[in-house]
Length: 275
Image (cartoon, rainbow, N blue to C red):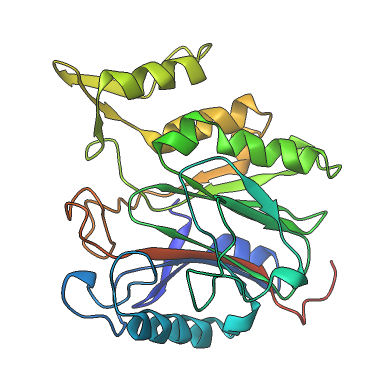
């Protein structure tokens, strides 16, 4: 079953989680329904792609209104395709919400168990990972391009939560809209890194399509890493949406680098009662 449901023109939500966990706000934007013009296709939410700042801020205000989650409670990052995570608190609210300059540096994943914080990251083909441990009310988001994937940012999140007393079997993960294996062509260098990461996996998630050219299922690599980290397969949901195939999304590959960014978001509303 597809975990993401189109809530309106601009938002996809993980409906099963929203229904199951009262007060949780979680999902991803599309590229439609915003203020940006031209190559940014309306709802660009990234500050770092050359769009007009006022348009990006206008788009962020729109999403803030749709989610009923004020911008001064958002947290955003300077993403570097690394594996650095940060546990955030109320003291971090507002960082990276209206400006790239004050975003949290060199970070590709956030987690928190505090209400009233919206974790946000930007994407245009890379794999969004959404984490929740409902018993501990811990939530997290991570940005996994091929570098973050083979660096095992998914495992880093599981390990960080283990330090918080959360066991892998308590963790649920949704793998979000990103480039599919048919659209994602890589060279042998990337495949070698994948093989080193999934050294004991019987069936590797790639296919040779021509000399030194492979189609790679980056979402499946992340699923395998999660399972190797102890997260049960039954706790992992995977989308069927492809950011490159589906024109509702920005795609760095399809659009040859000239494109906007979608936003993933995840947070507990302040009014949430403890389960």
